[in-house]
Image (cartoon, rainbow, N blue to C red):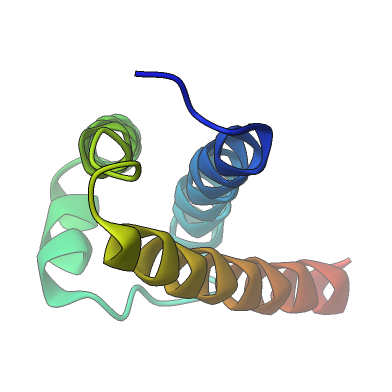
Length: 103
């Protein structure tokens, strides 16, 4: 499977933004600056912040790589992953906003 360079950049961007999301959420939850909106992740953060971060990073990376296997086969995958990338950018902006407000 050979991806176009733009798809590879999209893949790397989604994974990098997902990792930033997981790490900044973990820091924000542990410091009490933010609350997790996802009820499953919120329950998991109560169990272990580090464990939740590792599990969420692995799930997000694995699912992203799985979906990208079909990017050349189904054209709609490109559009769906573009929406995911946009959502990740918005979430990263939200995290950067609370980080700046705390500093």
